[in-house]
Length: 457
Image (cartoon, helix red, strand yellow):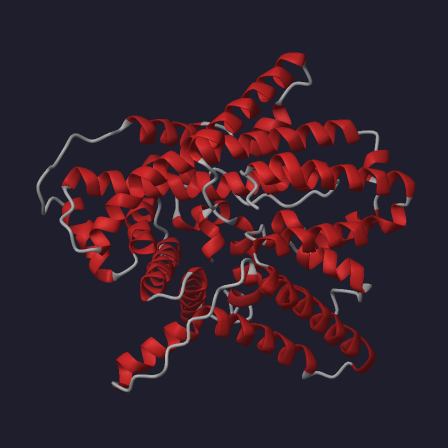
């Protein structure tokens, strides 16, 4: 049940909002359990076989937290975090690990293909954040229903944003429809939903229809022309942004309709003037997670320059691996780790760069490394890189219109969050959003609902 599908927009969402409103008004103490049940129903719609995995994950981690609260056993939380990561590894990386061992030793291990449960990376990281904070004395114990709400809340369970417990747990006890700004919040939620949906169906999906055949040709070993290589590379650069940021806008908007404010995940990343700036703007909640729960424990910038450079590289290497069980993802993460380390050395040496030049250099680096992220194999990446640098025929003319529109919106337009904040409370704005929603629905009816890119991670 995709956010951009008719069953969700005209079935699940209205029914869930109606039930939530009735419960919030009549029995507010039932609000959190109802949100948990709605979230489990939403998750089970995808594949009911994985619902027990989510429920067991919630229950076992909650029991570990309670046991740690009673005993303060130092080994308990690290063991639980390791167990969570092992489960993630089995589902996501078992086949990849078998291939690596086979390539390194020449001994072919049995390759078990596991169906990847949707959202497993995201809800695993939520467990890790809470348990790490619990062991550090920063997090309290919560009742099972509230912990299940934190892990499984349906707008963010499949593809984020990665939410810290401090950002949502206090909201579970609120009466969102009794607030004086309840109507304004609902209006902003609908606006975010409409804008995110528009980004997905009018920009992300059409770009995907252009990009996918080009990378498929590269993966199959068919020749790629210069224009097609640039079309595929630039197209994917904006496709992944509008697809993922569109999902995030919808998630934030839907959560707001239920009275929950989730953190922003994008802040115009293609305006960044350095690679460090890019990662402060792109998938912001993941960047924050990697910084606080990986980079800092590895030493961060507190133990000298060599440790800092190593921590940056290792963090981004593992961040790349998190995105996919493939060496191209590892190489993508390693490239960004090297780029960030180079930025540290540049700043340490007193280097300065004019903002326009920094923007151009950062953009070129990000665009070129997206090829590794998307290609599927090093051979396919090479088949794209060669024509990018002129080692191929020119081919047909460059189809620039959709990419030009996407670039203008991404680089010059406001983020959805800021646009909604500035939106005047006028009838004309409401009519405009209603028209946008109708156009999105008509577009979905014509093309069907396409999955979101980050569901595979």
